[in-house]
Length: 359
Image (cartoon, rainbow, N blue to C red):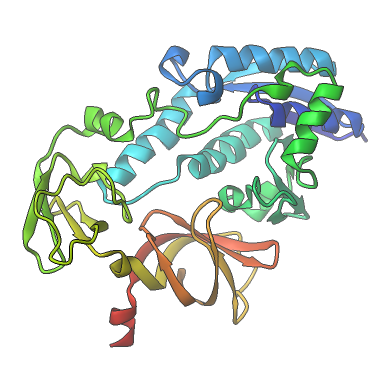
């Protein structure tokens, strides 16, 4: 029996080629564009996002060239609740969310996949640069485009219904193939930044929803060195935009070390104070069993990989890093790897610095 596949088509080159490859492989493919904004003009346009009327039209033209049926599904309400509101709530709680990761979890591999299965489809196809076999996720071969990190929040059962046709290709190969297939999106720029923040001003976006809330900026000893308009406007590791009036005694730059939403306080200090050697995380996803005695962990999309010793107990993951990582913030995902294979992911809740772990 021919596999029925729903191809998520964002309007970009990657999802168009993924749909074309799925159709060429003999699957019964239907294209669908997810309308994620109740007011598309409020989201980015052109290279600035994947949620616009322009993108919907590009996806439809690509489906016509491929020769597959095409539909637009309205998921705006679900996207606003599960991605946009979650983004605001996480910042308000002093955490640093990844909206692309949440979109994969809640929209593409929950809302979209659930609806696809209910309609009789066997799998969902996307343009992610990753590989999957029997529900096990692995990196894509293009190191610069690999998206396994932002897909690691998906369960193994969800991944058993996922097809990633681009996992074995590079971005350059995909653009060249799109041109050969006469897809007009072959040279369309990649989307970047956060699609639902129209002007790219994250702090302004959060301020419009959370309001101004003045609070102190303190140094490591607790001395007030400045004032802010809202702790939500800062992230751990941030250097620019602190607007501190009092220079550090050594004249070196200060960085955000942590954020306390309860006291509305931002603490700053030297760069080396950002070093982290222990990480605690919860919300474990994808683990088929206890992790190995040693493995690797990635702490942000396209970030460095660190060797670590993992330990799971009572639904909590603890990691001891072989070397310090910097700028690790609660709310980020910790994704464990054995080589190119994803072992599972968890959401960071706390970190510890070398001085603390040595005592």
